[in-house]
Length: 177
Image (cartoon, rainbow, N blue to C red; front, side, top):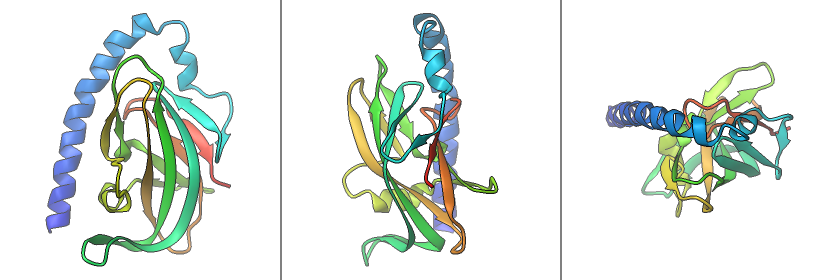
């Protein structure tokens, strides 16, 4: 019950903050970024692990992917997978000219048949010992590296990620195959 309440509160906060920040980004970004920013939102190709991929004001580099994890955290505090956890380590750099909030819940993972999985933000809190990926503000030029956690069935394999600089961006695809 407590987990459901916590997740509901976090989702409500994200929606409220996302609506406000999206409106601000669109109003200020359309004139200032009219030259090149639109091209950054639509990548020409799918990136691979180790390659930088840009969406809006963020440059994402997937460092590693590890599936088959049953639990994250410590023996005292942690989260147990419903199926298996896939831990995706990603470096995120702010390439814009103003602070941008990294929203872990905007990141998606997919299987070969197109089944979509959302990031498990609670498990992400336990998987990241030093850095949060849930709702982290990154200043221009700065970068963070964190673990994004996806809880998927045991017999499922992820093939790609769709990474977003905000809930309203077009996203960029990174192949895990």
